[in-house]
Amino acid sequence: PCYSMEPLEKITDAYLDQYLWYEGEQRHLFPNWVKPADSEPPPLLVYKWCHGVNNLTDIWDTSSGECVVMMESRFEKVHEKIDLTLLSRLLRLIVDHNIAEYMTAKNNVTINYKDMNHVNSYGIIRGLQFASFIFQFYGLVLDLLVLGLTRASELAGPPNLPNEWLTFQDVETESRHPIRLYCRYTDKFFLLFRFT
Image 1: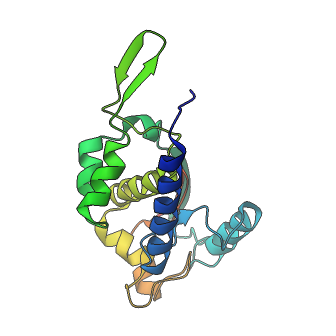
Image 2: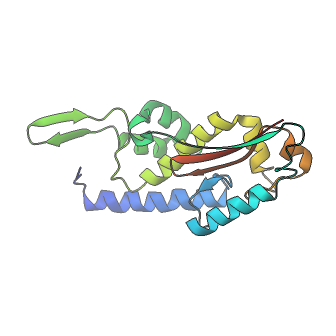
Image 3: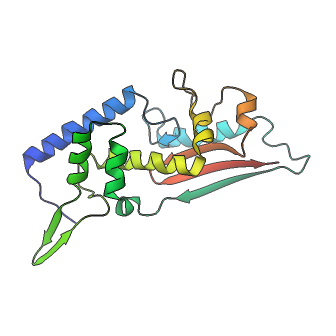
């Protein structure tokens, strides 16, 4: 679909998008498993993932019946399923409430096509400049639901000294949970389990 927006609104939204990404980077809002990132273009990402799997402690040892499982899945149609009320509440945790209201109100609009009207009260409009930030932030919430808060904080590391991607503080933290590695590339995610 094509949306027509005022040029001044596009400029405002583009500025807001740059501000949100800048502040998110400065405050380390997105943990190391959220991809794409500037530090790993896709070919290097695959190489680092393989290297990270091989660097895990005793990952290929199956002498006691252990097994390693890599799971790939996808968050289906996240853009269409984002609840705007929940999104507003979540955005208020990281930005000023006025900005959060502005971002959700831009999605809660009436869409006109010929003689038809539709009020978009569920899902985000893809043409907005800051839609990528909303998607990655909502994806982060989904990541926390998949991993659980404890394992997510172990994968990310402490706030004052965050972990590099695919590394842990120590071997005990690495082997404490069946989920050994996690990566989300936009809406597709990869989990590496080690069952003992």
